[in-house]
Length: 181
Image (tube, rainbow, N blue to C red; front, side, top):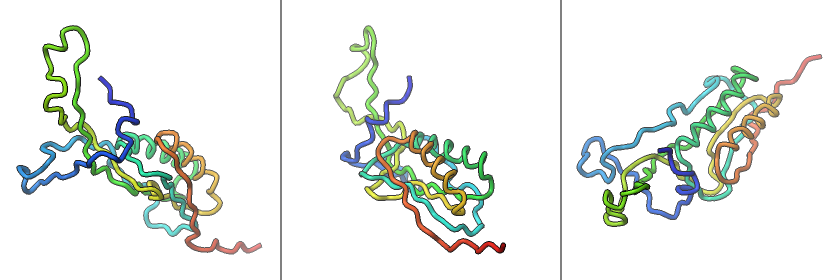
């Protein structure tokens, strides 16, 4: 069985479940932490100085599942590696702390004899999500001003994988070097 659609966990109105302790596991609200899909947070050239910074910011408070963030990260990074390899820095700015719980229900003939319905429906930890406030940056891209069309295309590809509405903020870090003719 596949995962539930993203709109079922997109809202931030529910109480977050994020407490997990490695030192004192008996005091954890979450007994077993679900597997994390998002593993890489910094890509490209980490040490180079760049001219312009682009931030992908959310318009509303939203919660995004880690596999959606990973799909957006892969789509953007794959395009940037193919077009401007080594001329960019890409940083995922959010971490999926929030644990998503699901009360899985069995469907089909005879399922009513196998489950308790809504009795003790707290659910089981199934996935993780990142909670973001309105205006918070999700992804940061740094590059030279000449690579602006490639960054915009990478952001477009990443936005297609995420639910919600987003905008791109541009910030000049340093003036471009003068060209000698």
